[in-house]
Length: 417
Image (cartoon, rainbow, N blue to C red; front, side, top):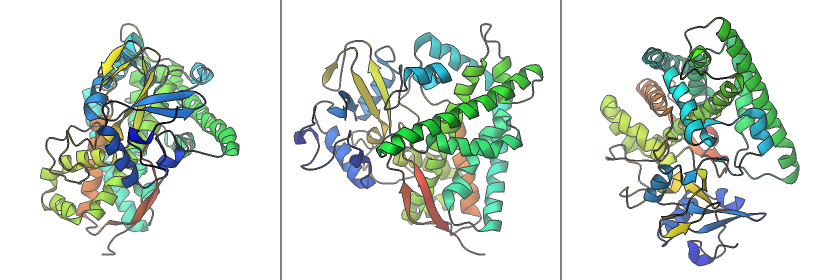
């Protein structure tokens, strides 16, 4: 099905299902979403090969669908395309792709493992890691922000929290990059045939690694998250090797990628809006929480998640039938004029700020939301209160993904003092 021009697309413009759409400048994509939000009902997006979905672009619609998992299900998968059956059989189902009792039981085990003691230790570690990263930055004077700063914080924090031995960490960092570098990015035929194998091999090696650590922790538990997960007793259950591997992959790919991208976009936003930077510096503790949430809203690290309709339901001016697909476009919902006055402005005092950067609520709301906020606040405190003139140089090099607002690289500079 071809989306007609009156479906919010200007003449000659690519639609959401066209890879060219995601190669456009951010402003062009946001303008297209604004036109879609003004329509009477969600439009159909042709994905090719007889597949497609309806685009949920308004804040209220994304939020409602998120909170009705029995109608809008995450299974068989939230990504586009959905994971193949053999991939799910080999690697296990990630928590984000589960519904109902299966999801509730797995999430319960994970939540039980996040004890107050573990979370307190993680928060203390975040501040120590952030300070060390900025110390290294000032000593080494790098000029690329993603690798030198933004990627390091979430990776080190998660590895410390999980209890990953130091000897495994360089390989894990490499595996995370290989597993996620082409998600949602259009590639030529040769790359499509070659790269998925590399990404899946990276996931397999990462999961084998953590499964081995899990076996060690069952024999000799330590004071870390892997030990808590594999020795948990929630209704007589703990995480098995495959469940542990799937959770670790989710934590590393989602937790590391989303936080590093939010941090990188945050530096770019503060550079582009010096008035907001000065306001933040005028009273960091007063404005930091609002700044972090506005960075997340404005950049929206996860652009979209997919849902499968399980029961007839009317939403946003359309009645959906079982078997149809919808996509929750968080990137559009976070610019909805009905919820956010002057939505394209970057305003660290924005209040209220009910952004959907961690999901639209419901059972799949992001487990790591609190830690991500703590990480961002700790790092920007270090970045802004020591090298006062830290700034981005040029525009972020975006991946052009339809899944996440990924930054490949960002040049930066700071005072030599």
